[in-house]
Length: 247
Image 1 (spheres, rainbow, N blue to C red):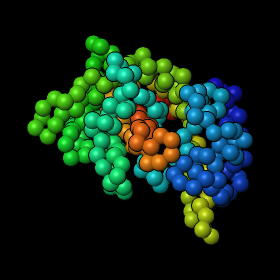
Image 2 (cartoon, rainbow, N blue to C red):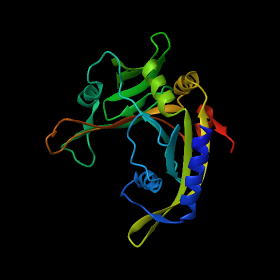
Image 3 (tube, rainbow, N blue to C red):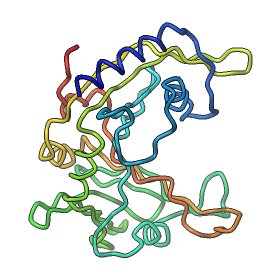
Image 4 (spheres, helix red, strand yellow):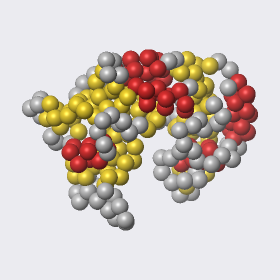
């Protein structure tokens, strides 16, 4: 890990000295995609770290967006859980009433209303070693409690991809009809342990963000479009999950 840190610091210093760099992709993913290209690395969607043993998260330093840790589809007894969520709990998109979506952030401390009919909450079940999705209707009638994520699967994802983390902050500007980034700082972290992760879910600090839609056209028209079920944490809470590595 120390060798990977030294190499990444060297690459980061080189990129920082480049100053303002034009984004190589439109949209919110441009900040990370551009940095990966400047590292001369291909975009990584695999469940392995981005840089040797280190996972890289790149963000606008002024952004309040949470740090997205990893995607994880429920792995309990229910087959095709993402499809079930869309079919049972989705609602018409505000942008296009012809398609349905399920977008929202759910935690374990309080119920969150998503759409017009249902409320959602996470429950940590330490007996069955699962994180369960609890759904009630507006009359507090239990609708669903059997969609879940296993501790084993979540532990594997954390240990394989996120034991070591680097958060890179950049400034962003818009000029001549283009977006530019200046990568300015890097901080390194080491994961505490899996039990800390589970406790932070119980405390409502680690949350799950759902982004489930429907294909509007093409060969998959009408089918579930899973943009991601993402475990995330606010950056100002990162030291509750990680220890900072002093350089």
